[in-house]
Every structure is written in C-alpha cells, then in structure tokens.
Length: 263
Ligand code: GUN
Image 1 (cartoon, helix red, strand yellow):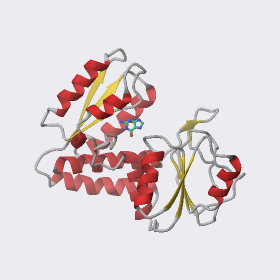
Image 2 (cartoon, helix red, strand yellow; image 1 turned 90 degrees about the horizontal axis):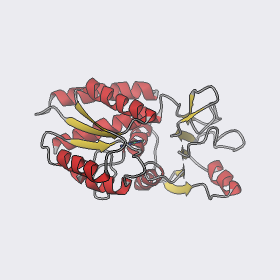
Image 3 (tube, helix red, strand yellow; image 1 turned 60 degrees about the vertical axis):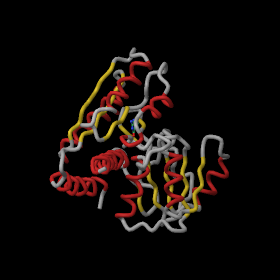
C-alpha cells in the first residue's frame, strides 16, 4: 500500500474508534509566531483532527510573548480537564527555551512524545515503524542506519529501532564520507533526516532489498518539495516526499491523542 492509501485507511479506523469513545478527544495546539512552515503543519494537524472527529483547539500567541507567559499558558492547558493532548509547535522564537517548554507540558498530555517522562512514542519514529510493519518489514536483526541525530527524529528513531531488535548505527555531520558509504552500503533500512537535498544519491551503493525512509523536507531551485534522497534510487522501497513521512507523523499524532483520551 502507498503511504497515502495506508494513512487514509488508518484514519477511517480511527474515526470509527472515536465514535465509540465516551467523550470527544481534544488536542490543544499551541503556536507561537507566524513561521510559514509551522502554519502549514498546524493546518494539516487541524484538518486531520477534523477527519477523525477529534476536537482541535488552536491557541496562537505573538512572536514576542515572554517565556514566563508562554509557560503559564501551557500550565493553563495542563490544568484544563477538557484537554486530552497538548503540543507546542516547534520551532519557537530564540528567546524561549525549547527545553523548558518541553518540560512544562504535562507528561500525560505530551502526545508529541517530547517530555523525558512521556509514555508516548514520538510521532515520526512511531509513524515510520507502524507503516513499515504494515508493509511486512521484519525488523529483527536488520541493519538499520539512521542518518541525522536530531532530538525530534534521529535520536528517538534509533531508540525505537533498537527496541525493534535492529542493529542500529547513527551517522551524522561528523561521520567520515568513507564510513557513510560503508554503512549505507550494508544497510537493510536507511532513515535519512539531515535536511539536505540529494544527500543520498547514486554515488552510494545500496542493497537492492534496502528500504529508504526519507524524512527530509527541502525545496529545490523551482521551489518544489523534495526529500534528502534522490528519487528512484535502486532499492526495494523508498518513501516519497511529499506524501511520505509527513503523513505518517500526523497519523501518529492522532493515534497518540486517542491513547491519551482513553487514559
Ligand atoms: N515541528 C516540526 N515537527 C514537529 C512535531 O512533530 N511536533 C511539534 N510540536 N513541532 C514540530
């Protein structure tokens, strides 16, 4: 199944699940400022909520909001019993500490999976593993290579793949090119999340049975959305951009909201 088909069918399933619940689940989305990418992401999340019958509450604050005030707004949401899940859209303006904000969100509401005590699996890694499993990918003993070590994707992805019994290697900006080529060439699963157009291309060799999961979101010279991997690499499965991991991330968010609402 393509990712689009998979997400559509999963949303139908979630919508049925919501109908059977004792209350309408509610996701609060805090957004600071007016970053165009964040506007687009938040719009997408609100649309998804509507499709499965989840109530989305969008709380917008100006770019200049003081850190203290934002933390107090987060606390208000934490204390509001009608809210099941709470996310703060990233990135935040420079004067606000992302670390403080992540800690301020009550771990029980943290459907992004960012809090150190969270019980929720972060959305992008969860979406990737759920989809690959639905495609019959067997993780046990596979060589998984994660390229990029961000807190949102690379690190939690590596952690989750370890839990799935993969042999996990994390590569990053300080990895030597010859080592990059070695690990990529031996990989059964490559998750690339570096934010660089054409980072993976035919200069590398790949196992024909390999799976490439492309988390990158870049714009080419024509302004079109493109991933970190060149299209059409000689592997068994390569996820598209757009219409790939972004949809899986949003699906996981819905799943986490339903889990939160059942607690
Ligand atoms: N910004 C980019 N990705 C994400 C995400 O998954 N959650 C939040 N809150 N902000 C983001």
